[in-house]
Amino acid sequence: MERLTEIDAAPKTLDSLPEWALVTSRPSGKLYWTAAVRLNGILGGGVSIRFATPADVWELDVYGHIEVAIPALGPRRLRLNPAEWRPRSDHRNQMWVPAPHSLATYKDRWHPFDLNKERGVTIFLQGSAGAAVPLPDDIDSFSDYLHFCGAIWKCPDVEKVPPPPWSRRLV
Image 1 (cartoon, one colour):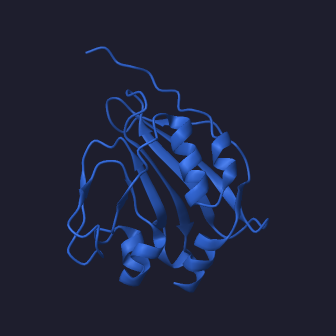
Image 2 (tube, helix red, strand yellow; image 1 turned 135 degrees about the horizontal axis):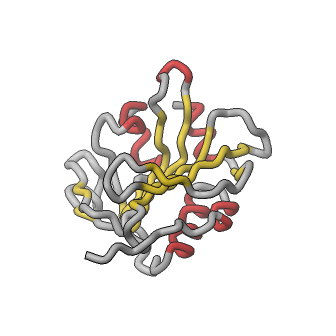
């Protein structure tokens, strides 16, 4: 947990600005964006920032987090400070979550590291439901969402991420 606390607290910069990748594992496809992160200016800690969103929506169901690779976990990754903007479903906090968020239900939300770290590492593997708090009300666009993520992740470079190449689908 000490290493995760260091990662959460460290100032971060993106190592590159790759393009979004389309993965067609479902009919509409999903867009992913991932970049390695430098912690305190140093690359090589197995840390990246990742975003995902369906390809056939416009500024909906955007999910981002800091991703941490641990060799002992194989392909599984730890997810720190996930932020979900306009997701398809709500999140309901459990009773263990401190007031005023205990049993609260949120649509737009993020899962602060400090609010979840006492539950142990498995919470960052999504082995159990984490504690969420609402996103600020003034997030009205993808660029607003990036600005928020950059602030909570201590990575202002996130604001340089290009918008996803969404394509609206006629129904």
